[in-house]
Every structure is written in structure tokens, then in C-alpha cells.
Image (cartoon, rainbow, N blue to C red; front, top):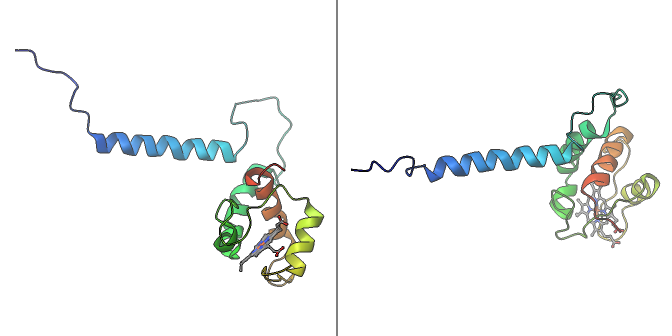
Length: 126
Ligand code: HEC
């Protein structure tokens, strides 16, 4: 007699919703605070949140992700830290050890900058 209401929630749907929430969470994390601070200083076009997304793309496109992991978490190459801009440039341009060398033609400075900003977010604290 009692129609069990609502018990039939499709697990597949819940998984999709959970996945979407997770993705949104990751995006929010990548974009910094996410809280709507309206009186914050006007973001410039080079605001880190935008570059982090581009940085992740550049990191992947240039093969960094293949060796260091797509979040720089380490793979066949070491996990990367929040390296400073000069240090990053020196390593990328000189390629120590097994690390390939990237010339300015292969990896222009603006893309290096985007990788730098990406690493400030995903890089391990040291
Ligand atoms: C073929 C694999 C490979 C690729 C591709 C690669 N790396 Fe590396 N990378 C390494 C290895 C191996 C090391 C460790 C070098 C050593 O000191 O022996 C390293 C070291 C580094 C370091 C220094 C880490 C530390 O803790 O000192 C940074 C920063 C770095 N890589 C950034 C990058 C970036 C940015 C890219 C893409 C533009 C990239 N790597 C592409 C293999 C790679």
C-alpha cells in the first residue's frame, strides 16, 4: 500500500551530478577564491585565473605533462614545485639531465609565463 516514494534515484544520474560538481569544484579551485568579491580590484587581462587554464593547456601541449604529470604532480619526471620565474626559465631553456631544452621559438616567453602561473597554483609547496 505504501508507494515507496523517491527510492528509485538512478545511480547513473547521481554519478553524473557528482562528476559535474567535482568538475565545478576543480574549476573553482583553479580560479582562486570564487567568492563574489565585488569590490576587488579590477582584474587585468593577465589575471592568473585565466592563465592557469591556459597554462594547463600549454603544459600539456609542450609535453611537460607527459613527463611531469598533467598537474605537475610527478610521473617519469619529478613533481614540480612553485618554482620562481627565473628558475623556471633557466631550467626550461637549459634542460638539465633528462629534461629537454626548449628554445624561445619552441616555447615563447608568454607561454612560459603561463606555465609559471599554472605552477604557482598546482605546484607543490616547498
Ligand atoms: C622528456 C621528459 C620531460 C619533459 C617533456 C619535460 N621535462 Fe621537466 N624535467 C624532466 C626531468 C627528467 C627533470 C629532472 C632533471 C634533473 O635534474 O635531472 C626535469 C626537471 C624539471 C624542472 C626542475 C624540477 C626541480 O625540482 O628542480 C622543472 C621546473 C621542469 N622540469 C619543468 C618542465 C616544463 C615547464 C616542461 C615543459 C615546457 C618540462 N619540464 C618538460 C623531464 C621532462
